[in-house]
Length: 317
Image 1 (cartoon, rainbow, N blue to C red):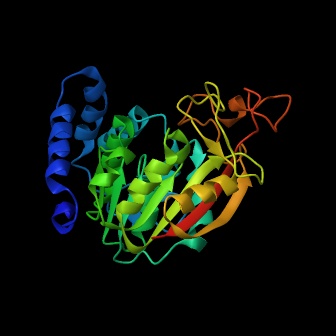
Image 2: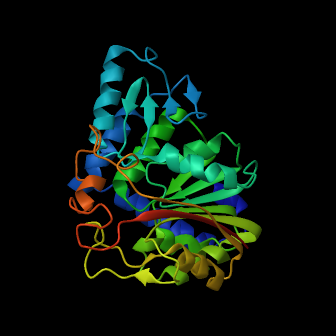
């Protein structure tokens, strides 16, 4: 079923037009598209008999379910989808140790969760869908992921092809398209996205318009320590990451949500970053947290800026 049939207040014609454009792009024979489409297509016939979404690792299938040829094929495809940024996952017995121990972040969010049962949820910047799978145990009506990057889009499609959860769907959209979904979502998750926006207030206002009255926004963001309502604006990169614009203090982030029109804004957790949560693994072989921090001063990034903290907030419409 197409969830859009239930979203009567959304700009359906525009969403369907963008979908068609994306569908045509995905069928391209250019190398960048084939690179991820072919692995997905090679295993889309496989279905898991076992699914466990209750623990730190999202478990899809169990070891021994597949014949040896299919087991090897699944392993090869999962390796094709490296680097794995979010996790952990266990897929047909294959343990995927992702760069981020996303289970730690989820455990911090759980105490602040509204009731998700039968709710319509958006996960903006959903990556490979780790948090969507964790939400699924709460029996939401729909969880719609917004993910503009082909690698993560196809990684989710592959995982959910194995899992078979029809109420989880991903669109090849970014936060820029959330304004097409006016008055659609009961809950919105915005995890690790806001500091990549050159206009964070505008993004928050668009998100608010996409939410139903009484809805809840959950925000998790990179930030800097401090009590003043200010934001760092790096010259080029922050912790080696390009495309980072405003890195706020917790108070600044709280003010952003309030100025964007959210009420009952609350900071419910914050903590310093560390390599216990973000690190290089066999499934993510590029630079990670330790490479972003000044080796002589763990309180600073390699650029000399304050080292990052992570801030968790929620607000209501």
